[in-house]
Length: 248
Length: 261
Image (tube, rainbow over all chains, first blue to last red; front, side, top):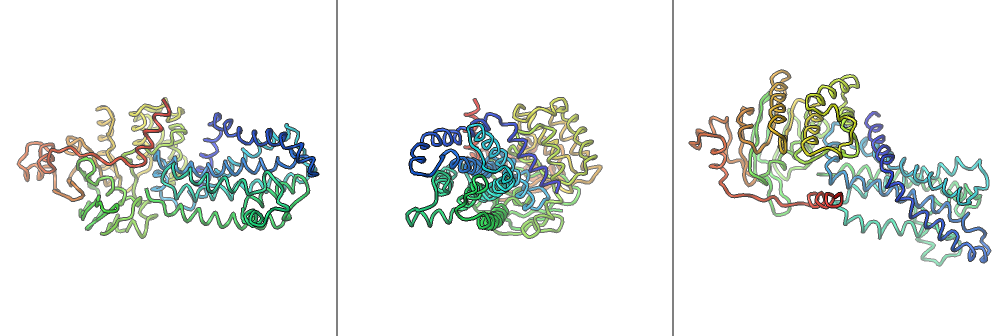
């Protein structure tokens, strides 16, 4: 436990110390929230869907958790390049513990980032319909963070350099985001898009978040929870496996 | 304590280590010398469970690093050739993290960290982040950290690279002391022949992935009819200069340095 804790603490400390990075990573979600939120608002309203800011805020929160947790996995890549990874890999500690400490640390920082965005959404005028649903919303934020921090670890273990990460960003992370229904409702989509959105784990996370915040869910909270829980266990196993195979 | 037989590591076509065999006795200081790119670090990486050998066998304290990595890791400590500190953390935090990873009880951890940081003159800077440290300070911290726990076998991969004579002297005195009082087996590499001659009981010289000679410093000098170990080394490995292939991480480090300026 001490090992998991100290590696978790390392991630959190590094996050809290990199204030410029925290501020920089707020930029993108803010753009989506403010520019899309207010820019598409009138059209969304005219289409009879209600307030777009209310709709998009959970999506933007989910997005910032997605990006932060995947990036925490890339921290592994930096640690590999700058040597610190070796220090942990030769230590007499099961790699599973190292992986769990790092991944939970990454998930925690992503959760902090998500909470920060939630606060900004509240300032921008986003209003959850019912404050008692906040714990449920928080649970979904935790699940999203764990799912993608584990995926980030799996990716970070498999990649050798930053060039590979560009590929992952463009062909995996961006599709996960755009197919998640963060920006548009999942109803009445063309067939291929419906299928794609159904296999995107983030879709369930954002749907769960939106459900908790607005009371309207596409898949239903229980389905969301079940699927996210399953995916989280699968990705954790995948991350552990791929981390255990790292050679320097 | 360490037994290596016909060890081979190939990266694609290239054999970085090509049929190496040697034995290191318990309680011995063993120097592993060779020009750049001879296969020293690759050998250490295989001994320390970081790389899987292509062929051949290794035992450390009777255990195979491939099948029992965790048990092997419990038995050694290592100071790496390349940096392996977390530069976002402070010196004290780096020490503490190492102590936790090696299961050093808190009280001993704190005591030893203080002793070592004072010994290597880093105590005043213990709460500064490592990224503010000079190259020499990082190196000293790296060594201090490697000595925080007392392993059975200590690997030192070019530990004195970039250190001033004072720090080098300090390091070797400390290593000899550890070896004599606690019986730690030491496996070291260095480019400074005088250091090897000073501390090592036995030496193996590796070139192009093969061992070209081994024995005590005296035997090596006798074998080549040289007066110093440096001459013996040159006689055995020739005087051409080798370049190591820069790999992805080196390029990356260079890029990161550029960005920081």
